[in-house]
Amino acid sequence: MATQTPQLFLTNSYWTEFRAEILQVFQKENYFAYLLDQTFFHPQTNQQPYDKGLINGFEVTEVVKIEGAVLHVTKERVENDAIVFCEIDWDFRYFLMKQHSASHLLSCLVPNKFKKTVLHKVFPEWFSLFLAEKISQKEIDLMLEKANGFVSKNLKIETYFGTKCTVEGKIKGMDPSCETGPNRIVEIENLGKEVCYGTHVNETSEIGTILFDSCLTLPDGTFKINFSLEKQGETC
Image (cartoon, rainbow, N blue to C red; front, side, top):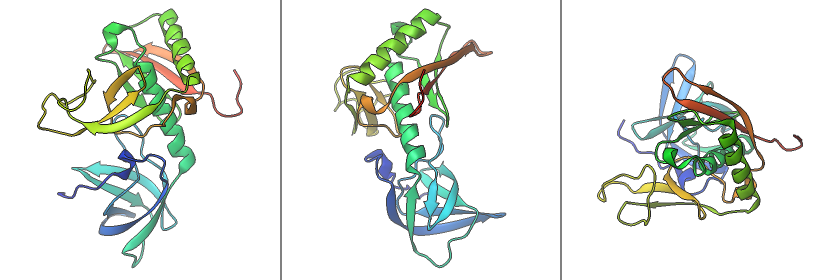
């Protein structure tokens, strides 16, 4: 599939309604997959779940990316419409944006020896950091205290594109060649930069209170720490 779908959420994660042209329709059993000329839907990745939403009022049950092409799956067929109206489920999208931003914030605060290798992943209800080895509960608590302190400071979170030769400083995940890219960079004011293609909020104050959930050592020795966000109306 040679088509490269423009992923408009990369420049604006807050946009929730758009129109698009259907380029192709694929059917498998009782499901239909739509290739659009552009999209604000974030597809399923290893780091973040796909966006929920509607296409012409029909529920989007999955969003997948195949060789650069983003397919939007529904159980119903959109009949005879070349141009469709699409809506992002804002509550779900915004919650993922806050969680993803929180995972970047905590990644900036892990012990120094893990900063280059720490991984993070967002799930529908929580998010996780993955470290090469176990750290103490005291170290986790300190990270969390610092993170929630930075949430209250309302730091800017910016996204922009660049290459190794156009952006200053060390950036985790940056392509080592100046000839490839550009990479999409997420920067938290005065804390750190990382290449990432997910959705994020614009300021740390939008994240809300970050809570520790649990931790465990995986069979391969990786240390997984699970966090969640305090939902509106909840108290500790």
